[in-house]
Image (cartoon, rainbow, N blue to C red; front, side, top):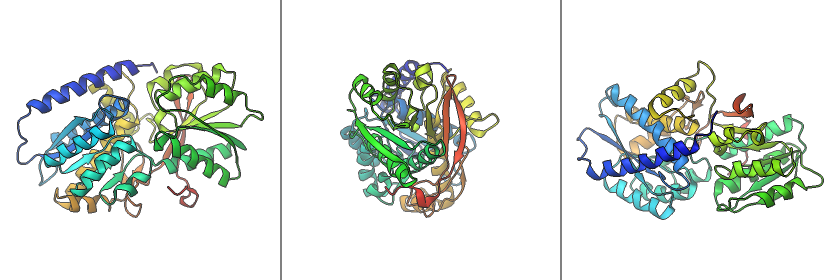
Length: 393
């Protein structure tokens, strides 16, 4: 895999501009159109992630509309607005979309702007899906109209802890940033699950969300005595590539476990420093799988760069909205909400079934583990932890 991050970011900047222009000149939607909004960070630090979700959502909308739309209800119009990866701007965009009468909403990939959107949309009884935000406090914070589709951080933590114990790791060190729930809570849930399985946490290193250089943190971890058997972090783009490069440069060869935020071309493009890293993700494009077919279709539509699972969950989110609306026979918020909350074993394109029923609106789905080997992702399998061993949010 090559590092096409800069290409993707250029594409997303163009996409944000095109979306803004199109929305500024669009004619009113036809009466039969079902409007689904997306308060998205198309510029700023979320562009890499929200942009991928948008691409997958666009593919699902095109597919559904080409088949005639949602039976008895109409076709879908996807309205994406750039909130610039800013929490305050996310609230402004949410008010705009609610005022325009959207029937459903996709929320941003980061928890803080997702909460800002969710608080506004929930008051209007508009069902929402978080296709990317995985911190499981979101659904509980917003209430009955918020659904989380991405693999929950508590599930990732449990599966990563199971893997660590299976590898014979007895001690661990975690790297976290208190600046976002994802980078703060997921490593702590891993530590909780690891210790519950008999492991020991030797210590914690923190970093700031706005920092670029990880030499100090990497040097401190490399100097630990005794050295931990494994280091776990939920740092993501661009922090994880900087951290793992610095850690290897500091002379440490300690195994590193990561989470789904590092599923990016950069991770696979940095070469030797990333070799052997194991991380969790929503699915794996095995030959002949639905996810492989989706990735090939994605590449054909958006260009010659590697897609990743956030596009697939964006696709799944629109498919879930369509399925719920069809089941409800309505686009009214309470009816769609109830239909979403009743979904059992929905076949996702990521290769796992998705269940919301009885799960407090946090999708029950398998967790995939992959290893970076030779600059490629190699699947280690899909795992479903015992619910009794999953940390409580």
